[in-house]
Image (cartoon, rainbow, N blue to C red; front, side, top):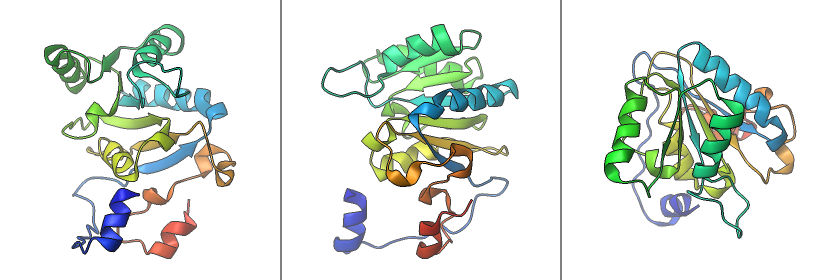
Length: 201
């Protein structure tokens, strides 16, 4: 909202990037519902079985009694124990010592980890061309610019990539099965505004 307001009222110049870098494919952006989480996990597992990697983003570092959203530390423990016990998972967040955080990032970049559970610290500056899944938990807790940055962490190689936005508070429009529902930000930059609102699949 703040970024959109600045573009409308802030008298800013707008640059339009209307083409993809050579060899890259448009990232498919999908809005999933809470009851579809197991299906999303299964899809992530399929990608890992192909030799790809995945990010799972959480809004908080640790659980909060005030906010009912996923927290990175607890989610990492749950995923490593109950969902992906056979896969190699890593954890990064802002409270980790910088050396430990960089070691986890390097392990993911070098292919020694299959899934990286993280907070927004991976929003910028991460380039892992083998990563094809970006799962954002509590997507409604992030701003549009952050979601765009998260999506930019995948699709950096030749393989088809996916950004899956999982919201605990879905709107009425998000009630159909997740593989057929794509978000407005899935459209390439050259798509007109009315076409973006139409969200073609």
